[in-house]
Image (cartoon, rainbow over all chains, first blue to last red; front, side, top):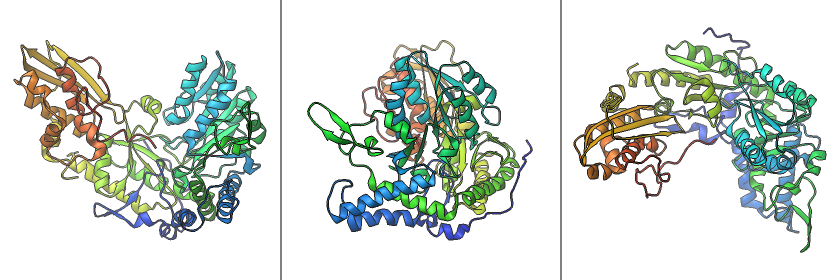
Length: 420
Length: 146
């Protein structure tokens, strides 16, 4: 299939300078330079994030929100400062609307177990899509089973773009309480017209949860512009440590919700008879938070802001525009998902005829190329594509065209090994 | 990599031995690794206490298919007790290549289906890639999250 490539001009980022901030990127793997192309799974971490976290441990570690002494006050200030940074980053109206969680998965579960169990009842419908990561499908599937609700799945077309006709029809059928939808596919890199989809759902009386785990790291995300009820994302895919992530929801909505987990820090007053909840956002943060991870997330946001989210997105499209035609010029390669740079991010899923993705990834590894091989927590999509697995390369701000060339060369090695 | 994809392995992958349907099969067991989509169906023709014939069908990565193919060559004519006694170590030694932790499940799927067939199972009791019905899982777990 011919590839239409738009806007391949050059990268707006000083990538070599950025790479110098990431200690792991200078490593060699099996004697080959590392080409880390598995960023949709998790990102590498810059020295600025590592240093911010180390500084807490080495300089002023103490539990947050509790101690009345300098260390605790300083750590608390950094933790709440990170929340302010995240709130600004996604344009939340207030830091009170940012709840720290371990990852996007926990975020979805928080909403499913609180708002979901209070509002979704027998006969209601939950609209989801085959593009969803399992983390934004299984919690709703299980909730639907528990309460007797119905899951309505929306399909994609051959290029992995959402079937808007099906989406509109599903909303028109009525009784849709929730639309649980990703704004960017982790398997194909498709960017959905999320603002339009949210508006259509709201007009039909549905609430909307947006899984922005693949969006927030790569594009400017403005929660007030999108207008959803909930938006979740993970820190580890955006230069921050695993264990950091956030749920955003409007304060007025969060105020109406019951807590998710019960325990310390999320209470204001406890007697034997009853407990009063803490204020937002702490009502949803029971126990000692992963505060060092959250501080790392704050440092990651600083780093991304400095690089510039628009430039990062442009850089990733530049790399995608570089890789796609070179990949498709190789006989026996099938590329899944959008074939143009319109409405996509830097995720490229493909297969090599005659070689299973796991064998591809193993051979790539020997060439220093890290990619994901498997179903990408996306079994519904794999079924739709009629494949068991794909090989997936995914970019971030530190990737280079040299790494794309290394991947292309590794495909040659794989074909040679398999005598194809 | 050169270690992992020796000619021996690639030969079994491209030209699987004892591949196809087995007419008159007495014992059949099928399993898959959902993570990567490897699938194997192992069919045995058991006569008395011996494996008179074997065929397997499958699709998936080179390691899973070659491992199953190599196993089928070895078990023809063996007693059921001998087949049931084959352990993971034996299979890994048979492959003769270093298998990384993430690929252990691929390498052992053939053994699992063979054990299922040899014990006459219809479903697997537990979640053990050693092929032992009562064993504890060891080695690679699903590397499937992100």
